[in-house]
Length: 182
Figure 1 (cartoon, rainbow, N blue to C red):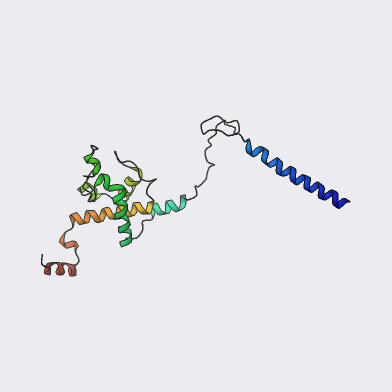
Figure 2 (figure 1 turned 135 degrees about the vertical axis):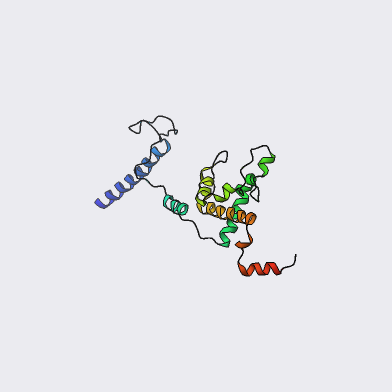
């Protein structure tokens, strides 16, 4: 008899537990972001993160931001692709600043081939892509850090293509070029 009573009590308690679960889930209090909420001691719905909180990918993103990838043909190809997508509408595919936006009445961006741009640091270019500069808006939320470094590498390749000297070419290649007929 004790066994039967225990089985009935367990079945009844289980049913009550399941029924009790549904009651609160369908009628929970909800607050809009900027609406006052009595739930917290300061009366605000939006709360500042606890001191020391680290977002999920912060360490990986910080590492990718500070540690530049090694220069490879794959990195340059990726930079070329990303440059054409994000930079060419304003800076043009050759980086001279005569992109499509100039034809549409927007201000002409600085040429990437100017002396000032050739002498700036890679970190500055990376920071400008990340945070914007002047009328250029920030791309930090659109372009991952590794792709930003790839774009910087491609910009340097573009600049070199327009301002290379014969002394920059290795000796073996210079001989080959001198022997080639136009």
